[in-house]
Image (cartoon, rainbow, N blue to C red):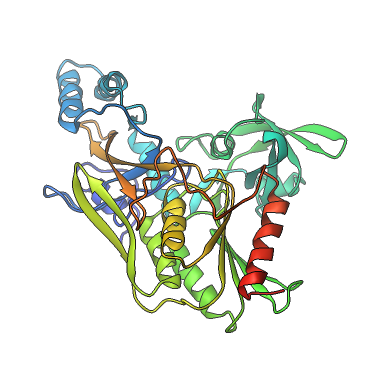
Length: 395
C-alpha cells in the first residue's frame, strides 16, 4: 500500500504515511481520519483529555508562512500560535519526528527493549524484555523495578511517560545513551544502555494451561500494522469452546484500522465507534463473520489508551466481553495535522469519538465491569481468569 519514504515530503506526505488511522497514543505515533474538504483520509489522532479552546489550521499556517517571508522560523511561529490558543494538546512536530511516528506504525522503534507496567504504590516495573535488545544483553529481567530514567524518578509517573523517556522521543538517534536505575530484591544498581532500532512484537499468544479446559491469553502491546490480522489468526486457531483473555494493559493505541480489524474478530458486524470532525459525524463499523461465541474477557488498566479504549468500549457496549481491571486512561479527542511551509506539522484538536452507546471517553476513560483495586498486575489477571472461568473458558 505504500513505500516508506526516506524523508517526509510536502503535500502528499501525510496522506501516504497516515492513511487508515484515527486513534492513537503519542508513544506509538499513529494517525488517521476520513477524507474531508478534498483531503485524503485519516489525518486525525486521538489525544488525551478535553481542550477548552482551539485554533484553526489556517491561522497557524498563515503565521508560519509570514515568519518564513520575514526570514524567521515558521515552525517556531506556529508553536507560539498553538501555545497561545488554549489547545493544551495542540503541538508542532518536525518532519523527522513524523518519520519516527511512521516507523512506529510499521512496527519499528528506537529504544532499549523494555516494556514497562504500573505496579503497587505507583511504582514502575519491567513487564517484558525484548530478546536480543540492549536491555536483554544487559541482563535486565521482567519483574525488576524501574526506579529512574536519566535521573528522573518513575514512581507516580504514567507508564507512557516512562516509556517515552526510555525511547527518548521520535527524534532520538540510534546509539544514544539512557541511564536506568533498577532494583531486584534488595539489590539496586544503575545501568547505561544504548538505544537501538528494534522491531516490535505487538501480539503475543500463550495458552493458560493451568486452567481446564485451557484458555488462551492474547496480549496486544499496540495496534501497529498487521496486528489486527495477527489477533484474527490467533482466534481462528483456538479450539471451539475455549475462552479468550484479551490483554490490553499498557496498550497506548495505534492504527484504528487494526483496532477495527480486532473488533471484527469478535463481532458480527455493527458499530465500533462514532467520531466527529468539526461537527460532522462519522462511523466505524466491524466486518461481519467474527467469533461471537467464545467466552471473552478484556483486561485493561490506566495505560490502556486511545484505539485500545475504543476497542474496549465497543466490546463492552455490544455486550461481547466482560471488562476487568482498572479505569482506562481517557484519550478521546481528535486532532488533525496540517503541514506547514517548512515541512513541519501542526496538530490541532477538531473533535471527539464515542463508544456505540454514545459514551464519551475523553478525560473519563472506560470503567471496567469488574474493577480491581490498586495496580497489582497479578491480582488483576487472577480476577480476569476467574471471570473467564465463570463464562465457561476454563475452570
